Image (cartoon, rainbow, N blue to C red; front, side, top):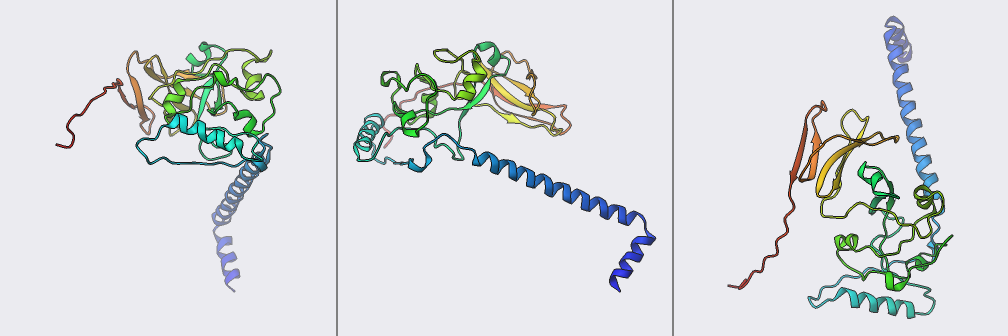
Length: 273
């Protein structure tokens, strides 16, 4: 009886069935889209990483003593780990592969591409001389790191970013993008490191991604379509760095936090008095 009454009401008001059908269609479209995204993510996660995952494990330690000296302690720890039976190699690392944390930079064969806001993004790992051997990855060209070219371990990420070694190992995918004719022995360019980190914003219309680029201590905003294409410079500031920005809802007004970085070392005496 209730179904007959419902059908009768829908028949008297022809707009009702159309709205119900539209709602069902939209719901199905959302469900199908979500299922497709999940399938793509699962497919990507199932791809082989090239790492010797079954035989890798991670050790983390924390120092509490004020006399702690990071560099000799880490070297002693590595020597001990590598002396254990069954251990093939040990290394330090700033990131654990296949984890939620990441650190990426843009790379280019010349500075011009980076000046235009371009470059090829890649995750950056800092490790010791046995980094490649420890991960169990296979080198298709070249060799592993020369121990003399590896910078000492550090607890400060900014210090690591400012002290790149003279040798790097890159993935075949990145090598093909930067140097189609062969990457072995080539030199590439990275953005200058500093204490001003990029800011990424997706304005309300969703058509372009806006991000900041710091060049020679001057920050400007660039834009690029999510599907790719040539990046375009949005602002043309001649001085100061930018630590944040945001667009108004209508996209007509821009708010920025800009200034100059100052670093002063202060010695405080007689703190106990």
